[in-house]
Image 1 (spheres, helix red, strand yellow):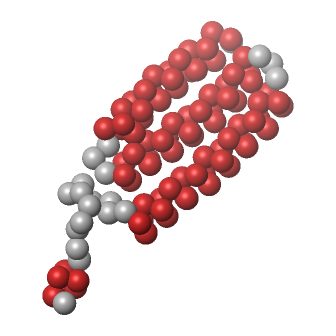
Image 2: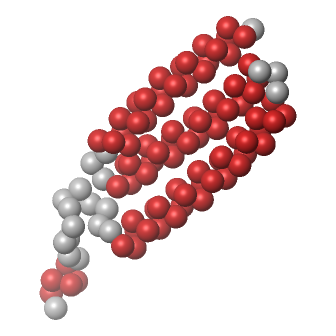
Amino acid sequence: MDTFFLGIAVTLCLMMLLALYRAISGPTALDRIMGVNVIGTKTTILLVVIGTLYHRVDMFIDIALAYALLNFIVTIGASRYFQHHKNLKPGGYGFRHKAEEDK
């Protein structure tokens, strides 16, 4: 049974590499935020799997819940920051709305 959970852990790490690629090369800030959020979610699951491998699920569940809450708060904070302070379009900064150009 430990081999099964070890296979799941390796598969999760490989899937995290795909999300890391999106987080690094995402064309927009939202793609990067989503890539980091996916990595955080998979890390939470990986912590539970590691707890199962060590037969200490009760301890690792607490760590995973704290990590998931931290991941959620950081994702919301980063999303709000980029929504209000930065341009999320891939064209870059300095994009003006049509209503501002008419003035």
